[in-house]
Amino acid sequence: MRKRFQLSAFAVMIVIIATFGVVASLQALPPGNTGFDDNYYTDPDFTNWVGERYMQCDSSPVTYGTPSAGHYVIREEWSCQVSQTPDVCEYYHCPGYPWDRDECSYLGNCY
Image 1: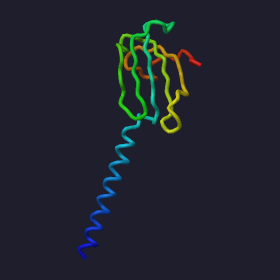
Image 2: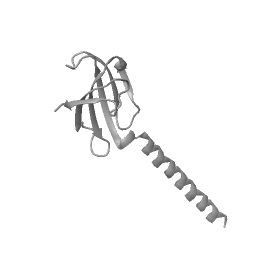
Image 3: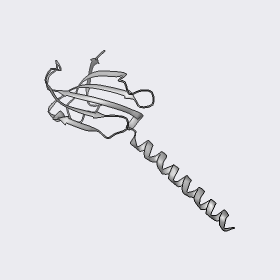
Image 4: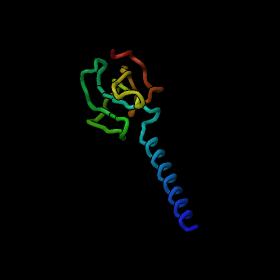
């Protein structure tokens, strides 16, 4: 009887640990399961780079430079489920930082 209780307790612990592992993995993925790389510029020709905001599929956003100074954005994004090679590249003009697609004007595709 005691051995059966120990096995049951062990099985419950394994289920709890596995559940927390799955939840932690899901929380690590960016919203929409996409990674992104936003490069910010001060000019519409995208020549004066001022900063970058980047998030790989298994990380938190990282910021370089001063992206809040730029209102022109080159947005690259990729699916975390398929590959981590950009499959979207678009130009935007945005009034604020960090950029919100709903508030930005789409200017075209990069490639």
